[in-house]
Image 1 (tube, rainbow, N blue to C red):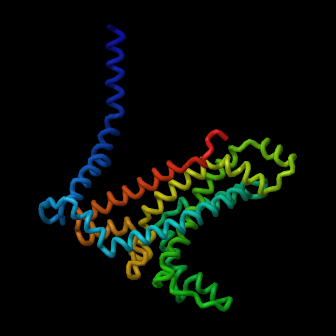
Image 2 (tube, one colour):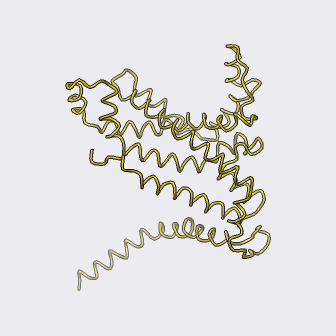
Image 3 (cartoon, rainbow, N blue to C red):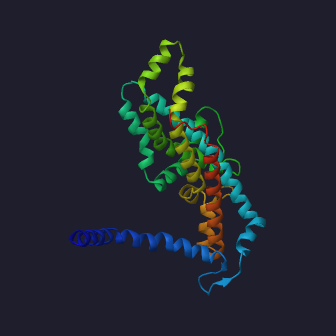
Length: 294
């Protein structure tokens, strides 16, 4: 009896401690998600009562040229950003995993953009991209090249944002790859070297298979992050010119807080959720190349 009362008292204390977290989860995450899903089937502009319209908000996106442009822009951004960031981060991690002088300072330098405010970074790069007095065009002019109007160009606006986000995101993924590299047993490289394997063979036969779980994690996180980009296009171009840099989350923001179409914005949000979910499940489905037993 005494043991039962003590266990009940311990359970009460446990629920008391986790109660605020559960309440916060319900109020600020689960509750809003359920509410957003419900209003995605309504026509609601905040100023009036929601009107039930069924799947009309979802069906509208199929023929909406702005939405189709948003899907195209976000897909292009992801297709460029993901491989560039992964290759760059892995290359830097391989370099900084060597026994070189000042590698701690270099690791810190490469990681600094990650902890810098994305808003501040966007403002600095906006100045650098300025076609008249920006640092990039000034450097190109010094070697006789006329730089484009980066953020005002239909051709260069989206790649400009990609270059900036790659620069900012390489440091974080470099740390992940570096952690994976340092977990690879050294004796594998020693044995391969004795057997006559060159550096490329050691990378392809040892480094890449042993690093595949880290690579898989980085791939998934970059995919999710690419589809959720917002700060950079909002601060640098606000989706322009002519929707050339309009991406999913920015489109959701504009639909909700500029045009006050809350139901439609919620529907687009769940379409984005479905796209990310499908891509993530596909990646897990075809993840046989990931070697967890290495």
